[in-house]
Image (cartoon, rainbow, N blue to C red; front, side, top):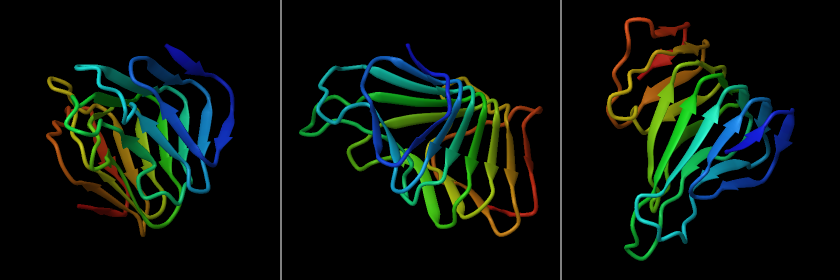
Length: 170
């Protein structure tokens, strides 16, 4: 397990290579064109899993359209399993269209939310569902002039989950 426990701002790419569990326990801000890339496009390990668990605050201030991206493998190699667990706070703070998804060769398989997702500006599309057997127990807050979209994958909301705000849900 690799952990981040302090405030950091990143304006480039962070490649979270296959295998470990990455844990954010601090304040991580993605700015400029930054992106978190889970997995390794050159890895041919069958069944490998990379997990990003956010227990702190993850600020998506990046102009990158896919600020969290599951990387797979090329050339018909085995696909990887990449999972994002949000147990803290995830904020989309910039305008434009942004997605948490897989690249064309990728394999982000789940976005599990037991924390808080704040869509303060722009559009956030979750193009993946929850892990098998996991219910979404978190909170989604969508500000006015912002949009939260569920674009793919299965998602079951627990009775304790909440979607609130004056923004758009699609």
